[in-house]
Image (cartoon, chains in turn orange, yellow):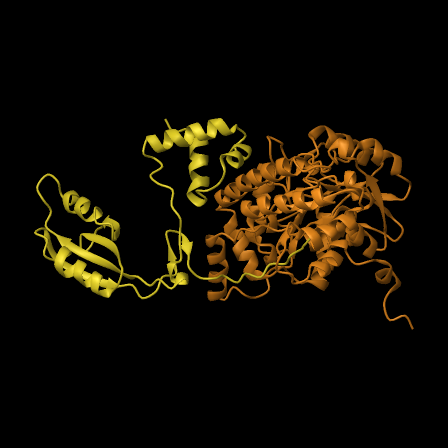
Length: 385
Length: 163
């Protein structure tokens, strides 16, 4: 008897996870491997969650999530994303954006369907498609395009089986941001080939240099074929709280809710009350974004001063994705030796797909002091090669 | 005139006085010369008062005797509390001098070498002052956070690598 499902067996562990095991509990390293804010959760949000416990607001919420929270999300979508979503039927509060992504893939896909995913891209995209018994198809991206997904590359890979496309902007691990024009061209393809767009917008507010975040769901003709996925962890600094949401037409949301109802019931109530409070404290997010921007400049400039390393300027998220091919090493070899000899942890780019080969992901959610120290160590390591 | 960039410079320096001008320039999209010029101007205008370092002297085994002292004073015509405040500020052992509302008028923080010096300060210098009508001394037992700097090791577990 095969104890484990073939589908699950066929899926390898995340490359990030593998690297995590390598780093383990080592104390002497500086880690640029952490994709989460280093800021504490803002005080008023912590207080709101504590108050929720004290006031016994600790029972199940509606399967859809607290209505008040959905109303806030709906207002936010209208105001910031130009998306209309009815709080009663078109918004589902989930356990982080991770669950929203899982629900969306399972709700939409049939076995054998193909889903276009950016390469390099966040490790869960392929896995979620795979666990929904569908087939992920990589859309290669190039450094010279700023790792943006190019419409012609999408076009080449659309077949009769293609059902959906995953949009990720700003993107993990490259920090790329799609322009309005990019998105319009992608939208045209979605409409022409009847594709559903699953738009992961978790890094929405982490955007720099006058770039503007555009939601593909706000574009003409996309409102009925987009599921917008978002959450609160990255912008408001509480990755451990696990609250995200999905917004889209009621048929999608209802289908997702069906799975959510049977598997999750609802997102954690205490965290939902905390998140509710975060809507009144956007000033914290503004300050954090400002600080990320400063660190981004320091890191990118520093990386470009190191021989044999070059780094394009990421426009969003909190990752830089420097090119290390000039060192003659593979991503994995480089990352491993950098860890052992340079005492800096960075995630090998190939963890995010074939097109990530030749790069490493450096997250700048660490103090400026650590960024400078890491830069010094990387420089020393590369010069000794 | 203090502009937006000055405000940014000040906020960063408030947290990290030793940050190189080179880094400030990269972070604020300007050049090093401009940063140095602005810092010089801000110092000249008295907006930047001083660059200093937070030190945990206890780790060196140096134990000081500190106290927060509430002081009741007779306000003087025209100068109010300012004369006594300036006078107290001139004593190098006095670290903070604050005029506050409430039962007492001033709050001062005194750092003396030992308890004898502290006692000498209160009984010989502070209490006998003409304007001082009463003092209430709180001896500091331990310090956890001062001026935004904590004096304890914080164990925050964070994954070294995450998605």
